[in-house]
Image 1 (tube, rainbow, N blue to C red):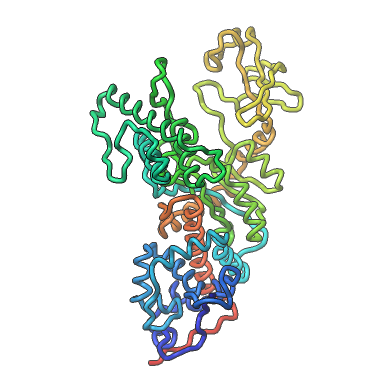
Image 2 (cartoon, rainbow, N blue to C red; image 1 turned 120 degrees about the vertical axis):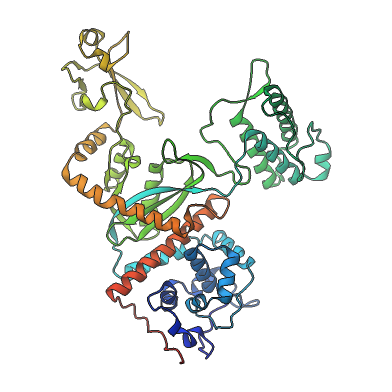
Length: 530
């Protein structure tokens, strides 16, 4: 049954006894003051029984414990110790001095309740409503977007260990009767079985072990019928995961023996404990394993307007449209302009934002420098469908094709004779049988406009003014624990990101309320009895 906060004041309330000990401008004092503005028990009425059972711990209180836990970047155990012993926490939560708290497992169950009932965005949304009530956040805003790595909590393993873990997981989910029919070569799949002892520097021994593992994989998968109607979903998922690991990492050589593929598969699974984690990178040297956190921030108020989590290999620009769409539809924040770094400056992104009537302020992606004259040095006339090279040669000949996304492209081709007679041929092309080619994408016009605009002084001023603050905002989120996920899975990781965004937004709102003396109609704290 839904439990609610007891509104009856007593002499043992921290607000009555200890308010003089708390800095009135601190986060804890503001949590106490804004208690009902942040969240109330009634907002959880649809996920609790209202008239049946024993009263629960008030859900608003548990939510505020999670906010404080995020604010101080604590574990569940540490948070419950603070609730039991720390007077600042008791004051922030408005509980009596002698309040002992609750069992640590309740935080786990409560987070699960958030996800099961699709309530994960509720508390974050309340901060945006509070910011709007304070006059900080407008309905239509200029936004900045960026992303940062979120290190995963799952164990990252090599192909040999991924195969072993995959087999072990399936065996643990099978019934004894079916498991008894399986004939395995290796005794390496029990909970306490060690990794096979071989000389890992010996290629032949590694090959033999891989062959045995692949045989055992096929043997195990042959006993899992994915089309069976009453198959356990966990068993089916485990079988699909193991099949994907084999497909991404293993191929056969000329003798039909299994071998590990060269290179890394595009969407490679790197962990069986968290299959949603991926290899990612923010630069050529900055590699990581896990997820990416993506966020948008209002330029004027410095309020985070949306925050989400994707796999580590997700391109930054792929999350831009979902972020601003969700901010508009669910949080009531419409995007007027969007500023981002070069990761958001592709021609596709330029077109998408133009279609949404959103001004994109991003440096257009520069063609790859292959040691030759850049595409930017050629004059591309889209209307007349012709291209002029730096030496004045012109071509209107082109071939049509499709790019990796299925979009139509044109490849303009200069004549072989013009290029061979050109004094700058060696600077321009290595082609022997044709002249220089220039590829023109379907959204080339948007790219041309963006490149022209980014040369203006106005663009440079706006871009340089808006970009740095979001880096500081990301640093603030990391300070509160967002560099590494506490949980396994993208949804749980996003829940952590949303609570971190909530804590950071509340800090901003409390600071502005104190500086501008914003009146929310909240009474001052009752003076302490001294």
